[in-house]
View 1 (cartoon, one colour):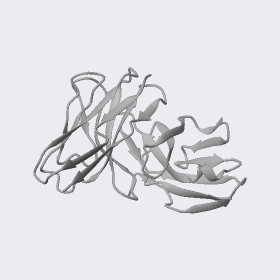
View 2 (cartoon, each protein chain N blue to C red):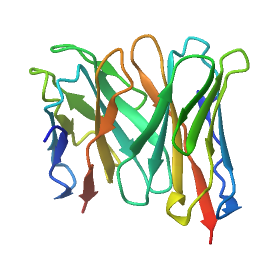
View 3 (cartoon, rainbow over the protein chains, first blue to last red):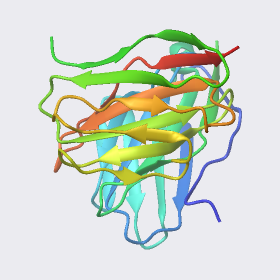
View 4 (spheres, helix red, strand yellow):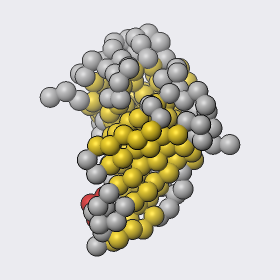
Length: 110
Length: 112
């Protein structure tokens, strides 16, 4: 079983809608969780990280972590065409090993 | 400006040659990472290091080697033992205890 699972997509949403991206993981020892955005041919850009159960908001982005159910999600409000990219979920364990999912491709239709 | 610098951005290599990719950071970050990304795929961990003079294998370490002689530097050598080295290589650094985990711009290696 892969350590970090993401639906590859593409997830297609209309401009202005909420995009919901999900990630599940198998290692209960995971400490911190990260969301990155990656445009084609570019390096990943950090959106936000979360390590406590619950929600964390930063502008149009909200990360949600549920350690009991072993999932972390990213909500993007008021989606824009410029948000079209691949979104990568990553988790870090207690030894600082950082593992990525394979990413979800998001398409925001104008 | 603080950041992570990878070089070279593009590199061509003949089969059987070793090549070293540079990764330097001036963010005073503690941990550093190397990943490989193939087209349409996610990031796979090659090696990582939390402190100077120590590093751990990731999931695909075979055919690669690293060193961490200085906090700022974490070079990756792609050896001739790596059978399919053509890929996009990404270096990242992390300040321990924070969420500051940033990537360099990447190095694209092509084996001719």
